[in-house]
Image 1 (tube, rainbow, N blue to C red):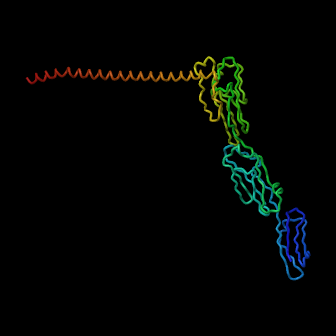
Image 2 (image 1 turned 90 degrees about the horizontal axis):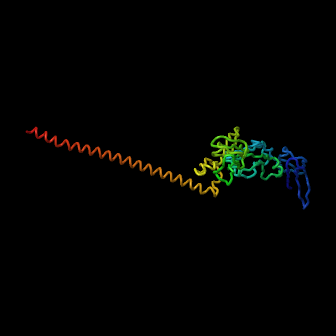
Length: 348
């Protein structure tokens, strides 16, 4: 005589525990127990006894899924360059006990606990971070279907805040030095790399705010006060999250055509982010070279002049010392004969 058992998860059609006897290739069902709606309470040790004194025991194990997962933050926000973590929990581990799996399988560090799991990132990078994170339970050796387990998971969108990687001023000929005339039109355009949230664009001339809220700066008629150094700034402020990003372009210097002979050298950039190209237009190149040579020649002339002045001063001091020494020697020799005569008269 043999004992067989079968068990399905909660909510399926039936569970059967049967005892069968084999005699001369015949199979006779002696006793059968059938459950139409398996519950956790069905898990038990069942016993049956044949017509004689023999009895048989069988243990019924009921598999069931864990409780639906919950997540620590339903609207998570990750910030570029900062650490980030997210946790999932389940109150009932199910049978067999379930683990928590994260999707997608990212570079985060996963820590498993009893009925919980945490994924951590040391430094957020918006270029590699997923925009959606899901956690769901898994049960090894379970009769619970994969679809049923997936439906118990939770998925949330991940919003990532990050500053623009580049801010550039688009100018005619992509030059960092522009020449114009009084009354001419001047157009500058600020291009900002992708960011989240959208930054506020502002224009500055000689460290003074000119315009805010528009990426395009247009001056219909240039005036003398419009001459100077222009920069474009992209600002992202989220005070509640401690975000204060201010990304600045490289400078573009606007000069009058009448000042072209003075200098066309662009002022040094203080921007820490990529800025516009420093390439000059072909017709400006000779002027720039001339300006550089003129500055170099002026510095050499100043050095030569200082050397001449110092040499003259040193020579004058030496000449004065020689005169003083000569006068002292002359006076000393003049006094020596007179002193000798007085000594001789004293002896006589």
